[in-house]
Image (tube, rainbow over all chains, first blue to last red; front, side, top):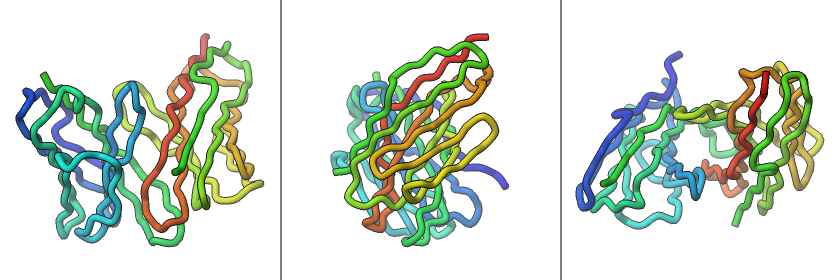
Length: 115
Length: 111
């Protein structure tokens, strides 16, 4: 089975621009979560989508948004980029039953650098 | 708010020297505790899920255990290829998928 894929792998953007990152989950996984990883804060939860609906959101400003398509693929968008948004953005997918806890499988990440 | 603390921050071991990594957690209700391994420049790789106190799981040289307040990742006779950052995460029982991560233990195995 193919793993979680993320595109692009690397991005360099300028302050004030916006960016869209893409994630394709493992086949059959309907839950997609996004995380931001920085050296100072570690891995922090951004949001989670299931069946095209955002089910949970972390403590990030409204500049961070996402969506999920009917094929479970997901995108996240960051508008008005700031220097502090430089990070590794990770996508994870899981089976998610809502009751039992299933492991999340991570993609390789998108390294975003804001200059 | 869920909290996860991992110790030590970094650990250097000689090849074959066994040790343990600690993960202390605070969560209102634990739905699952997860261990991941992360190599530089890559996404975390899933290792174990533990659901209840007393549970243990093993994979090759790794063994994870769980109590009501902490989890241990025991590494027996490690090899240089076990060098990585090991991350612990908890999921609470509010029915969502959010994982709260610790900051990890950077493990280096010296040949």
